[in-house]
Structure formats: structure tokens, C-alpha cells
Image 1 (tube, rainbow, N blue to C red):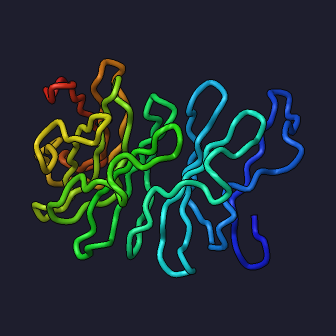
Image 2: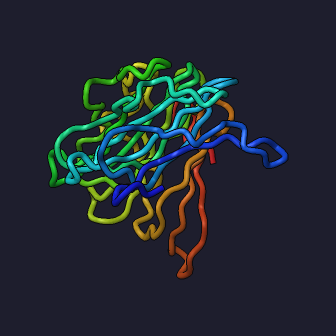
Length: 239
């Protein structure tokens, strides 16, 4: 919604038969900065959701915020929302997943030390407190990374994957984090495939058994075909 010349995010709850359940739209943040796409909603429990969104700081750099809303439309993390990351330069928000404890895990591409841009993550607990450092956790410091995705793969575990350029081409790497943000696999992540003709951003989902499934498209056969790889909790390439 545009208020004056500034775009802001609002939220409304709709019943199964299409009725508006809150008396008015709920504004996610009162910060006087432009709020812009993307914005994601994830469940945080049986009666709450969390919205994660981006905002320009002073109309100049991109930061990431979150807000928790209950079933009655009450905002729970203050009128401004909770800060995910407001480090210098831009943070390009990409993906979010529930943490299983009423909070959320967010990953993004971060330009604070650019070049190169790197992948960072942050966990907000059920009260909106930042758990992985004030400005997030550096997931991979090697070369340039883009388009990170995150999924909760099991109890207290999260898998992150991204496009990676350390070998000069479009590679896909992944990393597993625990609830404290500690890496569970190799420090710089693990390479999902040695194919060097990948031409799509990865897709990511939980496999339902503590691991994850990564998908992509490549041209190894001359045309565009879709491939997948399943990763176990102990990082065995299963399929």
C-alpha cells in the first residue's frame, strides 16, 4: 500500500468464506522508510505468524525486518518490528523458514564487505531477539554467492543452499546449521554436483527425514533438463 510516496506493508486475515476478520488492516512497521518486495509469511505456532520484509534505511540502503502477528491482528514485536539485519550497505532478503520454536530463520545476500557479496543468516527467537549475532552469521566467506534458500530439515536443524561462483561457473553449494547457528558440514559448504553447465537457481525442500532435496536445471544433455539431489543429515548423497 502506498501512503504518500512511501510503500508500506499491511496484513489482513480472511476467513474460509472470504470474510475480513480484523476491523482494519494491520501495518507491519511504523518505520518511516520505504518497504518493498519481497515479503514472506510463515507460521510461528498455532495462533501466530511471522512476516519478514525489507526496508530502505534513510531511503538509501536495504535492511531486513520481521513482525509477529497473533490471530486477532495484534503486532507482538513492537510498532517498528524486529531487526533481522541493518548492517551497512545492502542486504538482499531471499528466504525464510520457521525455527520450530515460535521464531524464524532468515537467509540473505549481504554486501557489507562487497565485493564479493556473501551469504548471511539470522535466527529470531519467539520474542524477536537476534540469536546468531547482532548482524547475522556469515554462512560462507568463499567467493561470490547469490540466491540463498533455507528450509527447516528436522528438529533444530536447517539446510541452506545457494548459487556459488568460486570455481568460475554456476555451482550449487549447501550447508547445514543447528539451532545455535553452528555449521554442521564443511566450513565453506558442500558442492551438490560437479556439473558445470547449471543454468537455473536451485530449489530446496525438506526430505521429511532430517535431510533436504535440492533441484536445478542444467544442459549436460544439450537441452534444459531438471535434476535433483537428496542430502541426508550426515551429508550422504542419497540419490
